[in-house]
Image: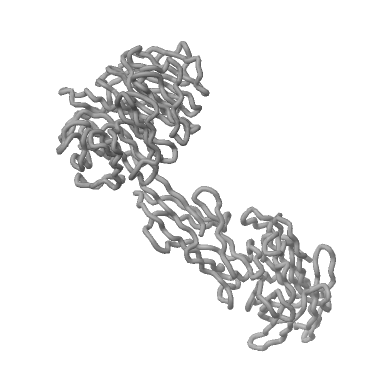
Length: 610
């Protein structure tokens, strides 16, 4: 009788394992096949096939007729998956049975509809052969082929599998036919993951109990990726993640196929391909801090984390203009704007050595810039209405409504709503897409300059305060909290990985040389800073804080506009940051000449099958 066991479902197939139970008097040995193929590949589909043997009841010392049966599924172009323990390309099979060192059977049989002992239906071809075996211990070896008479390509095999024929009781002997790989294919499985599958000689994917297991390993190049190997529940999935700390470069990943203990190792057979060199490339672009080097007409780029006070820029963009305001989009593309009567807007793509777009058609006295979720660049202009540039950012911008005039700060939320800091009016103005009005206007406590958004919270940096608003704004909105302790010229703000607020005070500190303050959630009126770091700090000599941002690991970066070896510097603070912290690295040379805004590019990690 046949027993169906619990199904295995690698790659979400419905492949299952079958065993055959044989009872003396009718069945003496059992052989179960567990080779699964993915349908619709290489001209062959996939359907279940089985191999078994039966003999009638025997007496002591007598031999009995043994009948081996194998089912060959039909070829199909269906794209669905179903169990296929015998390839639909199978045309013949060799079978050998040994008792000890003695070969008691060696036979080649055809497995086509016209072969002797075979019958065919629309569902499959079933073939049987007969022989005689006495009770005892045996080993069996079976190989299937895609050609007649044991010729052509070997498709699946099971070698030297021990089984016992016992008189007068049931016998259960599992046998797995292993697919013989002749190629390894790597397919994308979404973000930073791949599916790895073996193919037989006729292009069928080998999955299920007769499939090999896979191991990925580093091949060549810098070690940029950590590797998560396949599991029992996901036997074909390999996933990757960037190493920490990040190492830039491209790494080649190799894949090796093998068979687990107890199964036929089809990888040792002639023609088997079980190693794929250069299977995957993993590429990691580390984070950069880019600094608007105002009076030097440059943007300087440094790889993160910083290494030493003598670290030289990894990229230098000589712009021919005086960049002061920077922002970036979700892809790490950088936008730079000058400060003056006529604004020059430039876009820079990695590796940030030269602008790809230069636009002199709009803007004046630019404060902040932001990029909306739809990819529009919006510029807050200190003189005139705010400007909206659409990709590719080379045409004249659209002037936004009059409520945005003379704004110094701008930010966008996840819904694309725009928020403008209008300093002279001491207001924040909100415009919803498509930005044609009417605007929502709310009052601030002092003169707003810089804006930042974290989730559903808007932070408004002002001359003497930071107002905290819940979003979205309404006509009746008022600050949920007003923070004033230690705030003096909050032009730029940053949110750390814990959601706490950090303020770059241009005029802060006891000597009005700038300071950094941290304020912690849930933010309350009158809240005192949890951290205050006054400039200059430690052994650094730069001051007047402007730019502030965090990298992916929580390091804090600050630009000071004045002092240093030339004019200004770039400071790095590593967590945990306290009021007693000194910069882990302070770069105050490298040609800094009034560095204002800074941005930190996203860490970019990608995996590509080869």
